[in-house]
Image 1 (tube, rainbow, N blue to C red):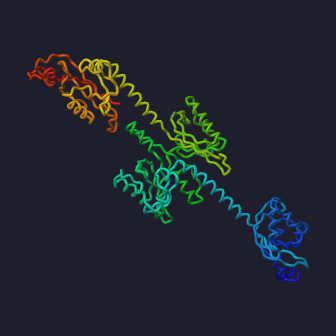
Image 2 (image 1 turned 90 degrees about the vertical axis):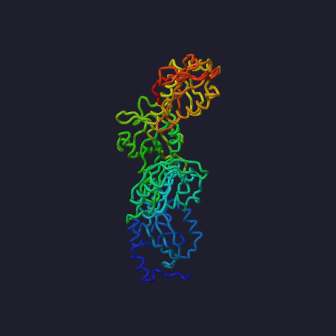
Image 3 (image 1 turned 90 degrees about the horizontal axis):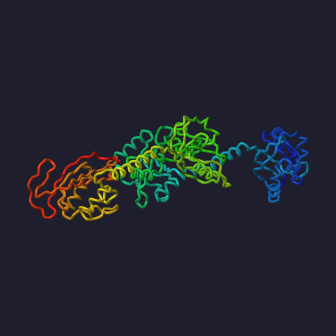
Length: 556
């Protein structure tokens, strides 16, 4: 390649000296600056004399010297090259530049004429975007551990599902994407249910409800779902975001404690809308109904959501920088549970506990805490996302059930009449001493917990007894019938259906029978009359009348 002697070319010299971009000429032999233009003097802060006393190495960070030497050794000095480097200004500021170098001759010496473009702002922007992306990825990891997210188009075709959706449904992501949610539908909801949801969405409104889905293995699971339409700039639906919490356990508790409708939901931290994924995460935090706290590695609060402020009565400013225990704990807070949570945070573990909390005005409520840590690339804990669910009503319902069962057992044990408590399958749950003595006397069979009461009923009366108990289980409050028993005893029996709220019959009580020793002598006693009437002979058992008696139904 033939090199141009720039010192004799007036046009090239003018291009060099009057260029708006910093330019300099460097010797290829010792990397000494041979000439610089005014733009370079202005940008770097050196005078021309200071520049000419420096080498290229002296405007580079020390850690970049080896990289520069390697580049120079591998690069043909007679070829134009372009690369990005870090330079140091006179004031010590480190800048990123793009350098394009041209091989030339200058005053008879082989040199490189370099044009410099400062790209520091672009680099800083790239670093900011990278940090945001890494931060978003860490937040998404924490969110995916607790919340189920899916995105569809305006026709309901699935475009995205997160890891939690894949985990709970049992389907792979590729089996879900491109399909609709009919793939996981349980069929438990009617057309009106889905029509109501789509009417809200088509109107640009969010919708919230409880949805029962099936896993790939046809196992049901329940979701507390918030469906949010995302609109484009013209107001048309661009996509639909479903943010769901698994409430299967809550539904199971509702079966055990009938009528309880406690919402267990987890939430996420609000993120800045800098990317499309960040926008989705912000929607998750915006529409949650639970309290959310984010603490730093030292355990101090750096963010709380509106639900937290509403429940605890503390403002965002009051909560910021405080330890959660300083705001929420009180005299009756369990210290053992607190230390378990503190130990989990110190060691970077997740945790789930129930703990008694206090509001700013010292009102007491029970909270279920679910904590997830967010780690940096080095595996160090940077933050904790803690979701708090108010479970005060659940605790109250549990206490009511326990107290009601205790009172029921005390009633059976302490009353003088004959009382037997049966479950819906007619197995004995409890009985009093009078019932045990009556069973021995009338049927010559011991009464004990766990046996089927039909085993102690004479064969002649078993079908009738079974029929009557089934009527009681269906809700009939009292039933009085004539029943055959040995030794000519009058039997007065009364069946109660002890139903729990919402029509569930998890507990069914059989109070009685009460027995009255009375010789029939071939007569029958009727509950609607106060006289005996003749009846035919019924053998050694006789036909016994029912003597009605009344007692209010005891409800759990």
